[in-house]
Every structure is written in structure tokens, then in C-alpha cells.
Amino acid sequence: MIWKRENIKDLTELFTDGDWIETKNQSVDGIRLIQTGNIGFGKFKPKEDKKRFISPNTFEKLKCKEIYPGDILTSRLPDPVGRSCIIPDVGERMITGVDCSIIRLKPHVDKVFFCYYQMSNEYLNEVNSRVTGTTRSRISRKNLGQIKVPIPPLREQKQIVETLDKAFEKIDKAIANIERNIENAEELFQSKLNNLFLEESDYKEVKIIETCNDKSQIVGGPFGSNLKVKDYVDIGVPILRLQNIGKGYFINKSIKYITQNKAEELKYHSFKKGDIVLAKLGIPIGKTCIVPESFEYGIVVADVVRIRPNINLVNYSFLKNFLNSDSAVRQLSSEIRGSTRPRVNISEVRNLKLRLPPIDIQIEINHKIEKLNDLRTEQVNNYNRKLGSLLELKKSILDKAFKGELTSAA
Image (tube, rainbow, N blue to C red; front, side, top):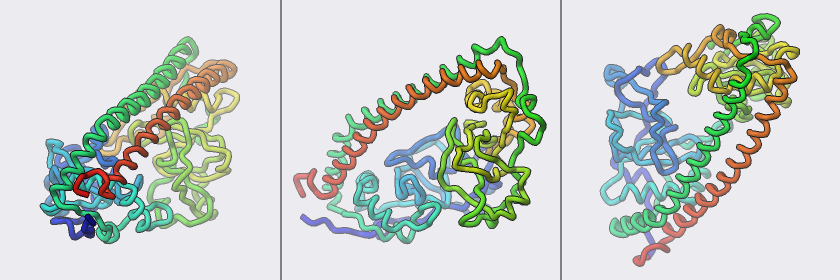
């Protein structure tokens, strides 16, 4: 039997985008803002530590659209573009952001069936053929709405859902176990990292600024009014943003540029290869990495701190590892201000305290950390390979389901 195919927009009672909610519109409580980060691959991610809200007054003022348990949210941004989940009852009123599409299906479409289809290779390939954007892929609601979905009779949809639920039960348990193992490997590494710095408690305590020649060696980016999106160009001097800083590693993607003249104007806020850069905004606060050799020179943005201590006093890798340890994070967290976007200021970074052993001991500690990191990386890579195999198995089963190969009625 050949299934009828219908456009997504024709399958819905409501098909619209979320609301444009700026940081200034957010509040400490009120109506929950569900974001693209809450949309997993077929599942909702609570992310309780990153909850955002708007007040009831703002809800009325902006004429926001309320979403309800059972609605489907589709992210029009990576990763991947087009991923979806069914919204659970979180015990709060909810809205969503402009980069999410709200889908409320007609009665002849089972929402779990629909969400399963949005996990299939067929659907994802169709989405990828319709994305736009050179620096950040996205799909418009119009293009999303034109994607055709196979719609068998409702009875058969439910049969397919039942079959997939059973097939995925064991796979999902295995995936959950692997994800826990990855978390455990990360936690074990962090614990051993923290212990290494605790072992150095007999050495003199110093502030980071005391390891620098002067205050200009620890600087933040320019005020937002001095560096705006309109200043970005396709080729030029790179700028480093929060999204380029991982916890101990540099993220080389979505790099933005400014002209040489603009960079000269902002040279006080410059970085060079080998510098330490720290994120003074977000959770966890203080993520730190070292600028790679491929980035000769550039400018940091407002919420990034560039640190350049005296190399005769501090090994840069040692300081990077300390700044990513719980000891540094606890110090910074105690100074956090800002309810919707936690941040610290430049003076608090300069006044961070650490026990500083001689350079040769710092290097010895780094060797220990590198060995621990290599072991952690090997474990995580093995787990990720297993995870990838299970996800491919799920996709293979989904492909069979939407070819009609899993139901007797097909």
C-alpha cells in the first residue's frame, strides 16, 4: 500500500514560530522560555540550570504565544537543523523563542509517529536540502512547512509507534548507560584535576594579576557599543567570542572578522597566539582555553578575558588547567552577578587566587594532567563510537518503518 504524503503545514492546526525574546525581556521567574537548547533529538532536555523566564506583564506586552504539553517544537537551527521533540508538562506556563517552530497536529496524525519521522534520514536529508545561511545553517518555517510526510491510516501510525517503541527500548537503555559512562569519565577527570591542585596547597598563594607585568596583561573585550555586528566582515582580523571557548579547548567554528582599521582601533583588547582566553559569562563560569597557533592575532569581545602572565612565573597550560578546575570556578561563582546571564567582571578575574609552585613543578603537574586527559579522551572516544553505532541502528530501523517494512499492513 502506498502512503499518502502531505506537507507539514497541511498537517497542522497551528504552525507558527515562537516569539522574539531579548535578554532585556527576561526575568528571574514567571513564564518559562523553552529554547532551542531544550530540543533534543526526539526528546526534551530540561536543562534546569539554564532555565529562562519572562514575567506575565512582558507576556502580555509582547503578545506572546503560549505553548502547551503535547505541542511539538522544531528547532530551525543546528544541530541538527529540524530536530524536534514533544513538549512535556513541566509544571509551568511556557512560551518559546523565534528560532523554534510550534507544531500542533490535526487529529489524523499521531504526534509520536510524526516526531519519529522527524528523526529519520529521509526527513533530515530533506531538511538539509532546504537550509540557508553561510555562517549558520537554518531552515525557514516556509521551507519546513513544504516538507512532505508519509501519512498512513491512523491505526497503522499507532502500530508503527508501538513497534518502534519496543525496538528502541533496549537501544535507548544502552544509549543512556553510555551517556552516563561519558559523564562519569568527565567527572573522574575533573576530580583528579582538582586533587592535583589541592596537592600544591603548601606553595605561596598569589593573585593572577601578581603573575603579570601590569594590568594590561589581563583585559576584557570592548564595550558592546564599540564592536557591533555591523562591524563584521567576511575576511579580516578574527574576533574571539564565547562560543569559541571550550573547557580546556578552543572551538574553531563560526569565526567572525573585522577590518584591520577596526582592529587597530580596538588594539587594547587584542589577543595573540598562545594567549589564555576566559569566558566571564555563562554556566559553567570561567571556561578557559589557549588560543591556537593558527590564530596569529585578533580581538576579544566584551564577555571574553585575555590573560597574558609573565612566562617566567607561570606555565600557560598550568594556569589554563587551574582556571578550569573547581577551585577557580568556585571563586568566580561566588562573585557572580546577573540573574538571567550570570557573569563576573574583569577585576574578579584579576584577583583570582591560586597556589603557585615553581615552573618545573607546574610543568610536572601538566604532564600528569596530559596523561589523565589522554586516558579520558580515549575512554570518551570509545563510548562515542558505541553511541554512534546505536544511533545508526535507530536510524536504520526508522528508515524501514517509513518504507512500510515494519507493519503487516504495509
